[in-house]
Length: 317
Image (tube, rainbow, N blue to C red):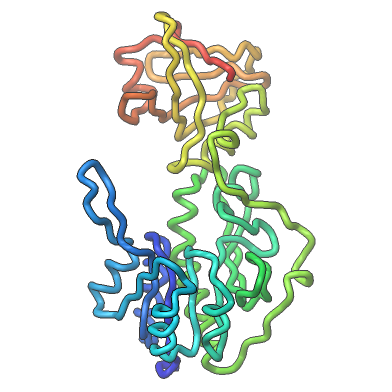
């Protein structure tokens, strides 16, 4: 198994967790592909992806193509003589790339395919109130997230779990599944299953924009709560408040709880000395942690030290 030559493709911290699992298993990582360095911040200092940092720390050759069809990149990639490519949170690959290794190219996806194909499967599983999700490995083909599945692992979702918390748990589970998949490939024990045989649930997981992350306070309390935890910590659900001076402020809401108190449907803010509530149609929704535009993130208790809920109202765009 240690003779299986592996090239890994990825960019963010999630990918690093999977890389650590592969390296920790003793497998043969012969190269890493990630995005090119980019300027970031006020000083426009060049920023290296987390995956590149891992590659440099572990003395693994790294390729950073601007274009995946570039002839020099393809030549350098082929020179690594990989048996298999592993893709985790990277770009869509052209056929010239994914068809290159003789044992195939597989992707780790953060859902139980064919459910939640798309860019944000972790977020949408929570937004939709699911009680379970999972990770899948599948061979890449011409379309996005449609290839034959190699393996899947189911993961329960806790009642108040945020997308960030689920993301971190998925790193461990996903790393284990990728290592298991590589072992099966090395031992010629792979029996890929078409996604059409795995179920009928095919809900989308589209990218998250301002338009689909705004809080609808007229919705059911559970729907509001699920949206907020499904977008915590990023990009965060948002709403608009108006203060007694007539100023409009966008507010990112990170954490809520559903109160036992019945709501009147006034959709007004109210508070105790330490708690902040929105009076929705069925129950009061407690706002626990949030960030008013121009201010730092804080708890309701911290905010209420210098503010009064009576000075603010919710504005519907």
